[in-house]
Length: 332
Image 1 (cartoon, rainbow, N blue to C red):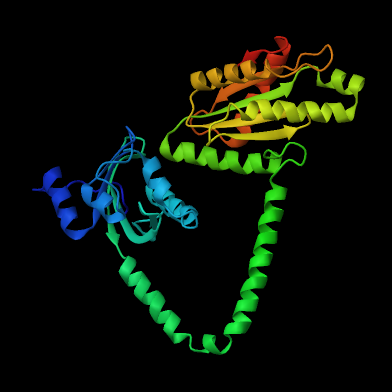
Image 2 (cartoon, rainbow, N blue to C red; image 1 turned 90 degrees about the horizontal axis):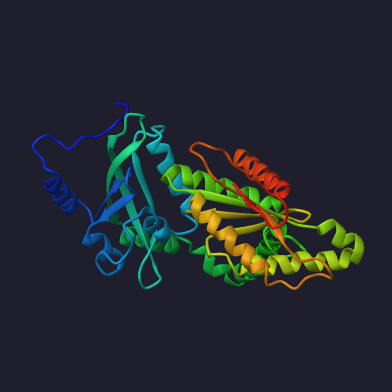
């Protein structure tokens, strides 16, 4: 049947249902999508080696323990299920343990209630420890590779070559996503990170804000003091802005003297406070001759269903209003 919601079975209370899950799983979770609260039972914490209820009761805890290599696959499967493109939610992946190791788990869940608009209201699920069976399969596969001993030296050589190639690929990827002058994210990287941020904000109903900025009087500074001095101005601006960033924020050079800061899990009012902090930080930057180094700021918060290009357009429009309001202004 098409999955709409799976109600609690007749004759079962929620407590009895949780007890039943305890018997057939190593850990259970219960997500209230409308409030964002996620309950995880003590067995879930024990399975991964954490103290009971020692982590935040949000989806961020779940996201944080998923192995980075498994994360895109898990999120795609989860999204397909809650959007009712998949009939079942059942997937295997690795979770980070308290000691830094990773444990294979089987994750199975069901939507048990939906809102009137079809979005998820509540979802219940269970984790099962499958690490031993995964390791056994890996050991059996290793034992069947008898030819590997005959070509061990050659394999090591190939491995070294692969490591050098991978290192070069990583360096090239890093260069492709970084602005050569300032070292921050470039336009390509910003578009990629902003798309990910919009998808994540939509999936988990979290706020996302943008601050678009450009340097006041940059052209006169460039014209009077030269291109090299102008580049030094951009580097100084980035150093000041970086000091106000949180770990999850992204600062990118959008082009020329224009910058964009992506602020995950940030409301409009909070983003306006961040912009005010950026303005205070810029006030400490040394002037260039007669020119004080200031920025104009356009601040926006993502709206429900808004795509990244629409969000960027609104941020640019807010920046345009800021430029019209005079130097060193903040507009939303």
